[in-house]
Amino acid sequence: MKSNQKIGRIVGITLLLIMALGIPSLGLRGLSYSLYMEPDFLKLVHENAARTRIAIVLDILASALWVFIACLLFPKIKSFKPSLALAFFGLWVVNFGVSIYGNISNLSLLSLAESFVKKNGMAQEMLNTLGFLKIEDYYWSHFMALITYASAAFVLYYFLFRTKLVPRWLSAWGMTAISLVFFASWANIFEMDISFHFYSQNGIHMIAFMGWLIAKGFSSPKGLER
Image (cartoon, rainbow, N blue to C red; front, side, top):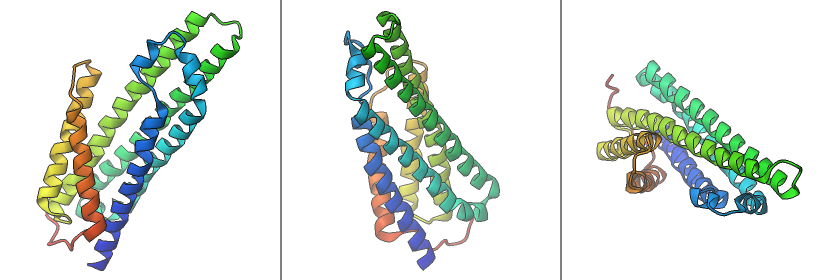
C-alpha cells in the first residue's frame, strides 16, 4: 500500500515538473505562422535566440521526464500485461525521439537566422523560404509528438482503469481527454480547422490527475484483471 502511494506521488510530482518545464518552453519558443508574415522574421528569430535555446533545453528535459515515468511504471504495467508495458515504454521512447528531431529543426532555424543577419552572401529571400520550411518542420514534428504522446497516455489511463490504482472516473476521463488530443492532432495533419478546446480539456484533466496523485498516490490494486 505504502509502496503504491509512494510511486503514485512520485509520478504526480514528476507531472508537476513536466508542466513547470513545458509551459515556459512554449512561451519562450515564440514560433508561430504570424511570425513568418513579418518581413524580417529571421532577424526577430536571431534576436530571441537565447530564449529559444532555453525553451529547447526545457522541452527536452520535459520529454526526458516522461521517459522517466515510463521506466518507473514499466514493472507495474508488465505485471499486468507485458505487451502493454512494452507498448507504453516504446511509445515514450519514440515520442522522445520525435521531440529531439523537432528541437534540432528549431536549432537549424537559429543557424539560418544568424546567416540572415550576417548577410553571408546567400539570397535573403532564399533564407526566408528556408526559415519558413524549418518552422513547418518543427510544427509537423510537434503534431507527431502529440500523437505519440496521446497514444502512450491512453495506454497509461487504460492500465489505471483496469487496475483501479486511481478512481475509474479519473482514468476514464483521461482516456476521453487524450483521445480528443489524438484525433485533433491527426485532423491538424490533414489541415482541418480544429478548436483549441480539443487540447485544453486535456490540460484540465492533467491538473486534476496530477493533484490526485500528489495527494493520495496510487491505491492498493484490488486484483489485476487482464
